[in-house]
Each structure stands twice: as structure tokens, then as C-alpha cells.
Length: 558
Image 1 (cartoon, rainbow, N blue to C red):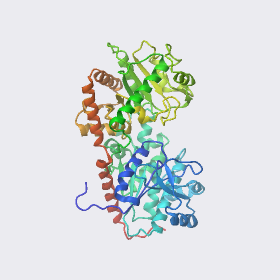
Image 2: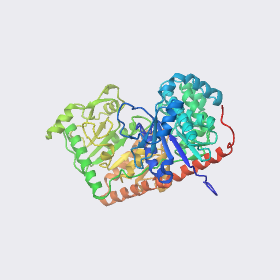
Image 3: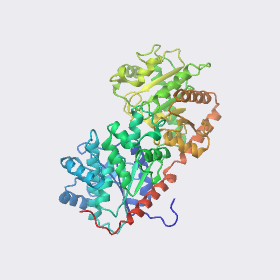
Image 4: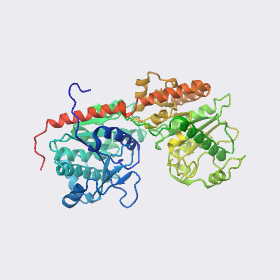
């Protein structure tokens, strides 16, 4: 960390595709960090997001016609920038501007040519979401430039922070046009690393043999890799979220991050005191009821409830290992202990099962299971769904005589899914354990969220959070609240056995011992709050401002 006087910004602009656009974990990073940053920088921290819902209501965005009115009118009249300003509807309510980036598609080839000439960014092989992301990134750069000049910030210390390859062109544009502004670029996972893992290639066993440029060519990822790599090389401060991803960056992007900025969070979503107990009881009641109506068999309230959640990345998130572990417990359960295992992972579904809805509405006591009693929502193509395929292969039928049942919930849990009608957190609170045996996980918010609720979790050393928890607690088993299992390229079944053993251990603990583990989990989560982690961002800002100051006085590029 910095010795001596730290440079602190007067203004911060932070751009991401997930500002006011909840599509993944980066939304959680930014929306929870916003509160802490605003406490320090007030209204001089400004988030920038894509304007995707001009004609529809965006509950994340509280628009204000008066906020930044003069600048918005100037930008529209003189630069044809279509901007809406308001507040992000998250704790702290920071200023946010949403940009209509669609007009720039008409000049995308000109933009790409300039990026090639100035920075060597290769866009010829672009496809998919590349154009959309880059046009938003370019528009973000224009907006920062416009704001900077309109409000005459030449004598202010300014940071422009961009997240993921999708915003790379924004960072490069700002460096080109406003060299006195400190640029920060955060990659939350390298595009090549994720692609290697997602294509079932051995990421870790062959790690030192991979070359980023070569793999980009092989995996048809040249454009995304190029913008990510060149941005990492060009910005004033390059950051990533964990030690494991830092190694990935150094190997695949040829750039060691200047600093690791781990993902913190705020626990204001966790109910306190009596409200916690009420919500937990409600969650367990509905989890038991859905299981009963689906399988035709009641599980006792003392049944062990375990879950995995997150995106549907079958291998990367360790969903396959979770199923295997539950299956192994099923066949090594001499005491016939009852277990309800839930896969809370949104899949391609057609809506809630009408037959299950009917049973839930009737509140009868069925004595027979529904057909295929292991998923709660109708899948569009169950025969091609990897989770269903594996459940069928393992003969997971959830019959009444089986004490261990596994239920797949292939729906976004936003409170209106038609079966549970509770958001994810309000179901998570009912669990006894969570399991996230990740193969590829740069950080891992889901286990962190779990321990924030005092629910112990199992994860692996291939998750950034797992490495942090291991270092922080100095305890590798469940007694510290987080059990971190060593996962390699080849020990799939060993990991499944370790998870099975953790489940068995927890089941045989008494209530006092279980509560002690829950308290350890909760205490560990407190060490990951933004109160502790924000210092790494302050250091990143210092590094960026220090490097930008070396260019101060140079004229902008014409």
C-alpha cells in the first residue's frame, strides 16, 4: 500500500454494462460499493450505464429532469449525446447517467479503425455482443469528455473507471482524449480464461502452457481478447478481483494487475434479530411444502436443507459436483437422515408447473409424486438439459422411500416465479448449508452471501472467495464457517466425497455446535464488508492519478 501522501480523486466516473442493469455479479459489486463511495465523495461519484429501457420503466433508475440539466442540454445540442440523469435506486442513491449508444453503430467502422491505429485493437473478427458493448463503451468515453469540458475540471483530480472488456474502448478513448484523467480498468474474469474453462479445456493442468493470443485465435475470441489485453496494458491502473484471477491476467493478458481489488458487500439485505427468525421459518415452511407437493412425501422440519445457486454454468460453478456429492450421500446414509438438496439455478423454462401450482393451491396431503418430481418449473427442453440428464443418469427419482431428495428450481427467484414467490435471499435464509464447488470462479458472491446469513458454506480453492476465506480464517474445515476444498483438474470425485463428508458431519452435530458454526460464518462475512475492502480502491485511484500526473500538461490528441 501507499507510503506517504495518497492522491485522492475529486471526481470519479465509473462505467459498466451492469449499472442499473441487473444481469450478473458485477451489478452486486457496483451497487453495494456505491454506498461506501458516496459516503466519501458525495455527488462527485457518477456511475454510467447503458440506456436499455427508454420506453419502459426501470425500477433501478430514478430519473430526474433537473439533475445535470444544463450539461444534458449542451451535450444533446452540441455533441448529439442522448443522456438521461437520475439516481441509482440502491443504498446511497448515487448519481447515474444512462446513455443511448445506438446512434454510434453508424460509425462503428470508423471507431474501430481509430482504435486499431492508436492502440492496436483488433476488431475484424468481432461477433455477438462485441459491437453493442463497444458502442456503449465509446459513448461512455464521449460522455466523460463532455462532462469534463463543460464543468471545466482541468484543475481537478479525475478518475475514469471501466469494468470488463465491454468497457475497454471507453478507457482507451479517455486516455486518448483526456490524458490528464486517471484511468482504471477492472477485469472481473478474463474472456480467455472463462472461454477455456467453458469449452472443457483443462485450464489449470495446462495453465503455464497457454498463451492468450494463441488461445484467442483457437477459440474465436480475437476481438474480445484484443480489447481486454490492450486496455489492461494502456490504463493507468489495472485491477482484478482475486489472487487467482491475477495469475490468470499475468499469463493470458501479459499484464500483472497493479493491485487486487476484492469484492466486498454490504449486509443491509440480511434481516436482524426476531425478523431473521421469522423469515427463516417462513422459508423453511415453503421449501418443505413445495417438496411435499412435488414428491408426495413429507420431510421433517429437521431435514438438512442444502443448496447451490448462481448462473447456469454446469461445470464452472460446480453444479455437476454438487449433484454427484448429494448422490454419494444418498448411498452412504445408514441412518436414513433426511436431506433436501436444491439447485437454485435459472434455466430455460416455460413457467411454473401447472400441476405443482394446483397442488400448492389445494394444500392437500398427496401420497403420490408428480411426474418427474425433481423440477419445479416446466423446462423448454428437459431432454437436453444437463442437470436433468445427470439426474436421470443417477436415477434420482425422488421417490417417497428415499430420504434424500434433490429439487431443481430453474427460475430466476425475484419473488414472482409462480411456485415459491419469494426472492432468492428469502429462500437462502432457510438453508442449513450451501455448497459451491467451483471449477472457475474469479471471486464468488454466492458463498459470501450465504455466510452473511450465518449459513456455513463449502467452496473450493479455485474460487477467489475460497482463497480469501482460507487466508482470513486460517481454518479449512466447516468449523470456521467456510470449508475450502482443494480442487484440481483431476480430483472431481474426491471433491464430491469431501462435500458428502461435510454434509454428514454437519448432520450429526447438535444444535449448539451448528449455531457455533453459523456464528463463525457470520463473523467471517463481516471481514469482507466494503468498510474493509474499499481501501484497495482508494489505492487503485492513487496509482491511476500518480501515473496520469506524469502526462499532465500534454495536449489532447486531435
